[in-house]
Length: 286
Image (cartoon, rainbow, N blue to C red; front, side, top):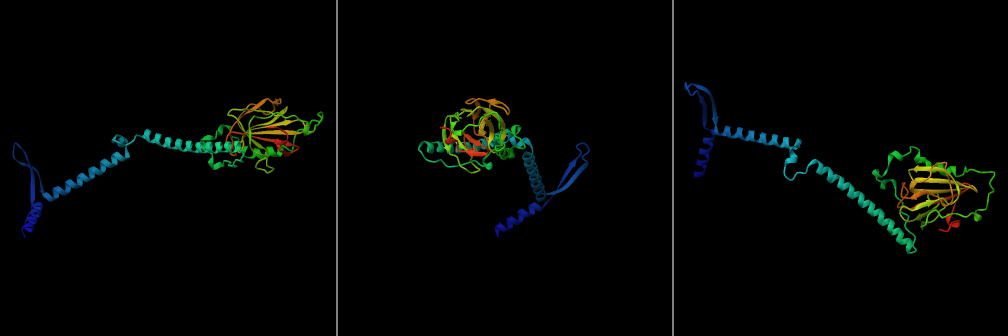
């Protein structure tokens, strides 16, 4: 009963009306007046405070003032975090490729056959593609070059010798990581060698193509006597241009890891005769 009376008195006090009057200090004349109650003052004050808090939050959230809040990272810090995350992701991919490459080397050294783990287009990072070196026709160059092998250059003044009598220069000192397969996906052998190893022409000849293709990276095709064509793929750099003549053992490229079909630094070497792919290991002692 006592608490009910007290609560009623409290609410009555909130509803009591008061008048705020402003007088002229000289004439004591009423200048302005307003009728107020405690409940009305409390309501107006609460609403005004809530509006001010919302406006301050919006001002901080939509402007650069939020960077002055302790613990909130600056714009350059956030960009740095994003870049670092991308770099870490790239490093993880590179480490995975390196581990796969070392596993292949270990398998070769132990006499086992390494897994044929070729890299697909989805594994290639966009920042690895240098568009200034990209040719719009490079998607088709591999197929066109394979067709051109059957259109080899013949010299009527040159005696065609038997292939068994031809002495081939070793293109690069290394280990055969993948052997010749008479299938369209691997008309040659893969040779793993030291980084930046030089690649040499197997015979005297003329460079009939030296350029970039999407699948096999930097490629060099060399026309030789006896209607032979040698092919050097996935190079890091080409040292000869189309039309130049080369001698047997002369450097034509640097070993690399370019092109979609490369899973590590190596040379993919092919040998063609009259448009037919030959097994290089039958003619060259690697």
